[in-house]
Image (cartoon, rainbow, N blue to C red; front, side, top):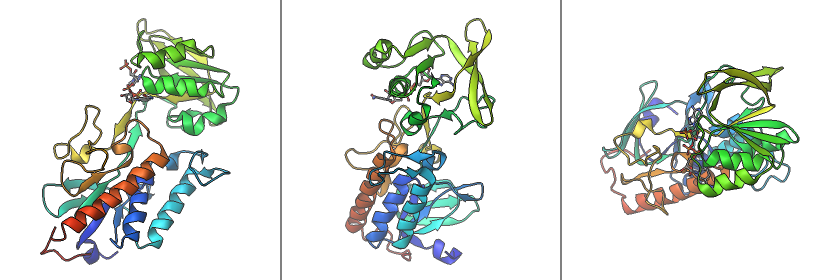
Length: 328
Ligand code: NAP
């Protein structure tokens, strides 16, 4: 897309290129709204969100043999492109939502104007930030038991965290793993009582209290052990495990919108349920940036579809959204 085309006002601009953003693009493009997706950039290419970090996706309907996460994203992108979506492979560094049209600025300083904006910037799993974590990510370190649990049949895995996610992940992992050790930094869980009780009752789950992981060790790119550090005494010990599942919360990618959009206590974008409308008219949110409960590719795609339909209806009701601006 030329710079001149880019600086025109577009009816629909979508930030984010995971399943939520790309599904919103497919729907908006098929409604002849000629959407622009600002897809973000990592290592010189499009980001594609968390699915590009997973291996095989076996729970996305329509793929009885499963599909690799990066392939699923590439296919969604191609589908959106087929109907006329245009992509800007850059990060957004500034968003002015008070203006009409909304004004976005990219990392290279380009301005993009939008009559309606769909935010699909996702969330990232909180990391431990300890040695070995980055190097062994995908080699036994994961933040998604639903995605990767199957690969740990008869293996011993560690789950880090004491919230509902940790209990859910630990319980789910017992379907595959021979043993699941939950490592929690305190002696009391944060998880709801019902989730705690389910985990306590499960013979395959053991709890290691007052401990954190200070290092993840591996061999040939696969996890072999973790270093446990006692939070009270500071003592450390090597603990053999073949998998490490992080369940220490997610960080929604909302920093661009702080002070402009309503966020919940955990920093997720608030929408006017059951729609995808935010508190700013013409601005919609979908996917993991507004969902801390389900966080699945298929639910992200579902809310992406909803956001495109909400944007289309908004534009139909506000055809004079930006009367003086050229339409892209
Ligand atoms: P969470 O409730 O924020 O729990 C995060 C856990 O990780 C806490 O136990 C915390 O320890 C621990 N933690 C945080 N940073 C850590 C670090 N750097 N090192 C070690 N441990 C660390 O997150 P969540 O479990 O993902 O839940 C998020 C929300 O989703 C909650 O509202 C939850 O109820 C909801 N949820 C619901 C369900 C369900 O109902 N089925 C399932 C999953 C999630 P501390 O306790 O010491 O702070």
